[in-house]
Amino acid sequence: MHAKPVNLTEALATFDDVYSPRVVARMNDYDVRIAHAAGDHMWHVHEDTDEFFLVLDGRFEIALRAADGTETTVVLHRGDTFVVPKGTEHKPSAPEGASILMFEPTGTLSTGDRHEGEIPDHIDSTTGHGLTAG
Amino acid sequence: MHAKPVNLTEALATFDDVYSPRVVARMNDYDVRIAHAAGDHMWHVHEDTDEFFLVLDGRFEIALRAADGTETTVVLHRGDTFVVPKGTEHKPSAPEGASILMFEPTGTLSTGDRHEGEIPDHIDSTTGHGLTAG
Image (cartoon, rainbow over all chains, first blue to last red; front, side, top):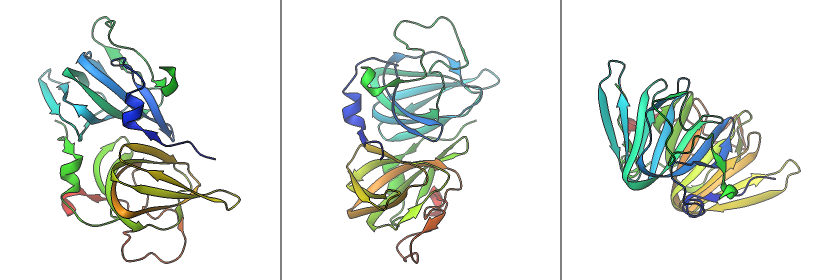
């Protein structure tokens, strides 16, 4: 009749991959995704959608680049929420590791519509994997 | 340039009202809302939207009524996520209290498009309040 509940802690324990989001729930045409974070993600931008972050554990930073090129960094800890507005270039990082939850439209690519430089090996360019994909 | 981070624990501490959701973030045309829960909510339905729940603390139950009238109850604990599909009659409850996060389209009424019976005093029929509304 309906999907089963998914526990975030248990779901995070099913995979180790970093910057490789798993979809824990779908609602309307949106995904709820979780990911482990470690080290730097890359500068990228989602032109058509905001992106919501909730830090589940650790310290998670998001560098933001304003239209004039000015960069600021938002530092987030467990329980902190933040929305990166659409069209805003941003670079997540987690120097000591973190785990995060994200809301975003189904199909949103983890490396954005545009990104800066080559995608390094430790970043998975994906629209999200199923939880059992491991 | 951008909104400030909001910490969920701190935001929950700014109000005591039960079943009176606060909007902690907006992304695209969606709200991220938090609420304290205690006792029974009411049977209601959102005809046009799914509703995502994440339990932040306590035990939160959602009774669901199938099209044939069969009722089942999903019991959720801290860290559990669950999506109530659109068009599904449901009744949240938290016998010993809980706090929750919800993700739903801006404008979604907390008591749904239809509800069963009169709205009791302990339930706020709202599309969500701002955090500073107290």
